[in-house]
Image 1 (cartoon, helix red, strand yellow):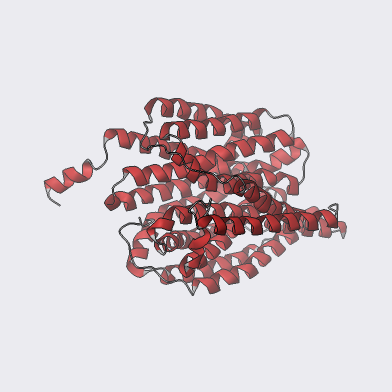
Image 2: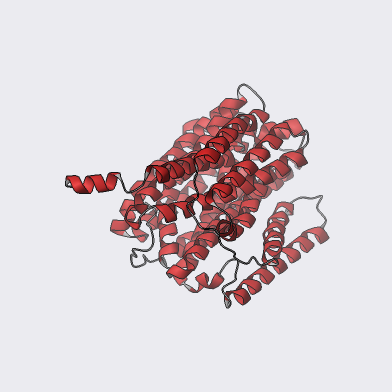
Length: 482
């Protein structure tokens, strides 16, 4: 590389633009860190507020559901408001929700705080992605995507470890209390340093689509959480599923109708592209598996194996960091070898890990769980980058924004479904065993065994679907997720 090229690479972003992206990256790291920090504190919340597993998992499920509802709206929102105002709105919601969680005297208020938090998080991620597409030249987007992928992977991994450390000195409220001053600091810095890089314009929002997404996604996940609950009336269960499915069908019909006039909240014509559809299906199964496992393992390790929160956080750290480190490496391998050589072996490893996790006993050594978690994390690293690249790379340019919104929405919804299904199977099987006179520890382990085996059975679909994926022709208009 000659000196001219080197200077060009050093200055492809102005100091103003570098400042904007750096602030957005740090803010994104903070809000994503928060998404998983609560997982190892759930037992503390259960004991303090006297709620059971099925109730407490709504602190995670409601967070992801809110993300799934708000993310599709952010495309419209970010076109109407300035970059600076979007940042202030996102961090204000996040910080206000965090403060409410920290001081809330009862579970419903903690849940409300999580929903407000999630609203801010849902705005932050699309704001980061949109700003990067606006500021970073196409030739350098790959390098920037590598940085983002590391932030998105490492932050959730550090969350449980940080929370475990905080829980050594204070209650679960300290996990939220720690985030409040950080959120306020980012809010002040962003208000002073972030400049507007977009030009707001008037764009229509379909008033019917938003409530339909809330009823559809919310109804289905709530219905799943009721399965196995002996106290839940059958009529309520059936009614919730009917309303949820009805709302989703109405939402799909509404979007197909609005697509003709280019006014759809989500343009579902992206699903006409086979590679996009298969990628989204595999991604949904992977997110269900990942989020279900991430919430199940802390509950199992703390309640059945009686490990302290900090130990559990440290046990889950290596896998998350490994996933982040592998992100850029997988991106380069994908460019050279394509999707199948990376994804097929990885998908088989995930199935093996589910089987191994279903064999955990009271005397299982800690390193066995760490090794399983690391193997699963590495496998998902080898799957998510190709899936994201294939999904977007198989779409025409005009559907790129809608494709991104669909992928983001499906990720959150699938994560919420995975959490609900895992915890429902875990709790209902544990209760059945407990009622049969089995000890608490053994009943919890039996519940987890069934949950992991069930997940492995469903995962077979992902292995089969992976075999049908093909690498799209490279396009200069789409960044590769390196």
